[in-house]
Amino acid sequence: MGIAERVQELSAKIRSQKAGIQTEEATKNAFVMPFISSVLGYDVFNPSEVVPEFTADVGTKKGEKIDYALVQGGEVQILIEVKKIAEPLRVEHASQLFRYFAVTHARVAILTNGEVYEFYTDLDAPNRMDDKPFLVLDLAAVDSTLLPEVAKLTRESFDVDSVISAAGELKYIGQIKRILAAEFKNPSDELVRFLAAQVYSGRSFTQRVREQFSPLVGKATNQFINEQVNTRLKTALGGNDATYDTTPVAQPAAPNSDPVGSTTDIADSDDGADRKGEVETTDEELEGYRVIKAIVCSEVAAARVIGRDSKTYFAVLLDDNNRKSIARLWFNRSKKYLGVFDENKVETRLPIESAEDIYRHADHLRATVASHLAKAA
Image (cartoon, rainbow, N blue to C red; front, side, top):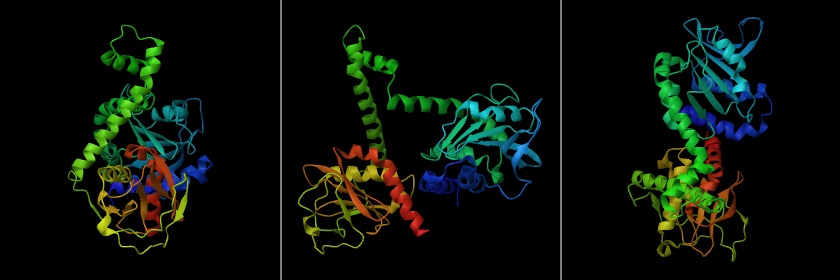
């Protein structure tokens, strides 16, 4: 199993168990030790590789402990400090890492809450840990472009010199990406002012203009990102030649109305009707299918996500299996709905305006796929 698969496996575990973890110690046992073991490849039960509660006297501070020290060639190479899950990481949490970094041979320090891993080194001054991480791995939204760098820190491929040489570029690219993400989510006045100046003919950027353009900038950036994702996905799927068939899906008889939040149990239902000849797959259904496929490909290979159309709805299935429904697109009506499922295969229909709105339910769709994979394991 490669590092991408190991990371995704741990990511799915965190999503399914996160709500039940309340303490720092539970965070270590449930998430951090599996990260050290399965992702980085260290034997957590071998004290010559992993030293828990690592102690080193620092100046006048005696007996301070850091949560884990990872050892290579008899020397401490990586230090890890853990906070409890869901606790936002702040630089103040890294005070012990700062002190220990200066008195060990470690060139890499990790601050984590079990879900987010911040990697630090000493780019700014030798033997002094930087204030900002050079790499941030968020297991709630894995950035696959970072995994080759994480792989360099695994026990089998440990290459700290290569990591350090790439850290400068990674540090600034990561910070820029996080700034862009924050701007897209909540555009700053500076960004609104800059973009408005390109399209607005007025001479002054007044409060009224700012209030007018702030939501427009947010909407435009979101649409631009979604369009780029859809364009790349269409290319990956070979234009309009997406994988789907028009065999009717087993389904309950459609109700006369579609109230918001209505639910339907689909575990074993089948109306037995053969409507294949009446099926017409629309461009909007295909767009919705591509959006769902783009969302859940973080959990499973895209080739395993299959679309199957029927007269009533367009189904998105894992492994083309009716019992592994990911979602349903109820688009053949004036009011559109996205059908999502809980762990009991009960469907809830959520009103949406367009395929782009599916992105708002990305976490639920990923969790559904993760649940199917866990049951199959």
